[in-house]
Length: 322
Ligand code: UDP
Ligand code: MG
Image (tube, rainbow, N blue to C red):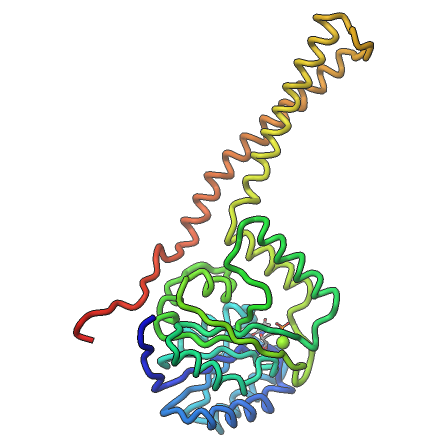
């Protein structure tokens, strides 16, 4: 681990979607906590993710009152939290950044601990949720199943309870801006990068106001995205299934042909020609699935190439001059 660069300027990135009710209180809490950090300089970047309530006006007001530190970036429409976080990171000029939800579920009071961990020499400090007071039992169960599924398809860098509440070093931010994929899950990509990471547990309090906008449908999409963008295994399913069907039907065909036509039904199964025909049909289905599976392998290649993920990520370059 190398010596971390001191944080002269800290960027705080906050995605906002329809949080008009609570965001003012959140800003107040945030400013109070930032003051405790005794930073040389900082910026608070609110990214308004196309809110349809009064958030835009509230944020503009906060930006006006909190200038020059507080800024509001307004996206043209709702692009989703992942895009909003990227917009914030791309526009941050600090030596490090902390990303926080605007509903108060990522307690600003934890920022000091994050900074202390960074000073120990980590490139990224990741908040791990121990408890979410707003989470229903169904969602918890869904979460559990989801991570089991992820494990099954070989996606190991996505960990349960790991959140977007993070501190990122400048290096991580710069590398992150090289990702060009459109459908993205910020925490998944950050974890994929392989920097030195440390984890800090936090209790997620209830929202300051309103309800979570990540409903079941959005979360399902996110879950499917995270699997498709990280695993090729689903594509291989048809190949495996096709091979299995072809193999079994071949065995069945040989068995029926031998039993009925060569040996004159010694087992007394009374199988007719349609049983044989069924085996031939099954075999053909198997072949089609295999062909599709092979095509999928090429598709997977094309998919990976079009993602244009960075091929590698360099850790700090050290030279004697430094
Ligand atoms: N958010 C956003 N765009 C969206 C949905 C949510 O920027 O399309 C923001 C939201 O304002 C909040 C954070 O992302 O600051 C987390 O959202 P939410 O509380 O709805 O989700 P959960 O707490 O279930 O993760
Ligand atoms: Mg929330």
